[in-house]
Image (tube, rainbow, N blue to C red; front, side, top):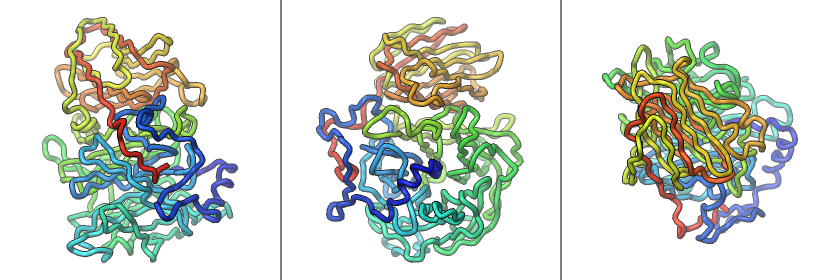
Length: 529
């Protein structure tokens, strides 16, 4: 969770705790003065509104928090400010899904209190009731989060970020904060001490906590989620350090051959290879106390500019690891041209570990996103031109032979907006160019460079390309996510023309429109408005 570094904004939001949120205690609703369409004909129909990605009904959203699976339900908590479309005093928003495709909005889960705003964190199901918050028959869901005390920060103190917990006995619908908070105080840790990820470590029979402290991660353990013991740290001289480390995640994965390794995700802002925010990863070993890795080079889960702060779901079956990221970048996240909401999440993606010369992660949308879609096979030539009104909300797939040769994909419209994706065989590099893609002048950092990604390809006869478009975003996957680039894009009019220019024949070209997950008769959750 990136803290506020704008003095004027900080001074404005510091008074939040003293003044209090405009809250309707009777109905749990947070009111505001924004004009929000609530009739069924305009619900989720605003310009640039994602149709099959998760976005809040209204107001500001950033990091995914507390991803947890319980009783056949996926819980997505997220950083949320229910008063404006810019970052403010953080709450935890909440949504649930049965399939990772359709989402149901829930009331705000956690609100600021006297200890501070509710920054990023995670959630677990305490199945053994080690915390004592529930019972064997009704184990508690426990959330751990960072408290950010804005008044202490404004006073110039450095211990204003601590870690707290809360628990739920009704499957995440309501929460009680632990009266012994903070459970991890800030003793000489500095100003960036946050983003706890907790999980149960079966081998040691303990809870593990990993959080970040400026330029490194710290690991703790506990038997009851309340008292935590410091164990080790990682990363001060490893990986990318162009900015503050954030949003860690640590989990095991097995390769296709059955070899198990541990993967550590670390988001960093700034310092990503294409500017601003990005998420790196490390592959190594974890013995219950220390994470170690022989890795020396930087590895990135997504080379696009709009996938940040992602973490994975807790409590999934052991053979599944599902990731969701915030589809934006702190360089321009508060300026994107959307209203009355701002920000969306990436598609939920399955993470897999592979070993080629070295270990690498792939990430690709879960099967629920593409199942039951109606694909239409299209012409296959070295030069393809297609006009289709569904290009702004679709999955497009095709293959090219290996060794991969130069190619270029172009999305355009009659407003002469153009989005380019290409590959250079000489450089062995993909690129994504949104410089002339439509509305870009809301920030001088949005379209100031062409994004590039070194090619990581699978050992197959053909290269598989898959593209997901959704009104204001594009997610580009090569070989089932061996190389990934995610980017926001705001065309003046929907893209209706697709061109593919290739030195080799394009094969297996097909397109499927993806329907909206937001029904026109969807019940509006007034508690989020």
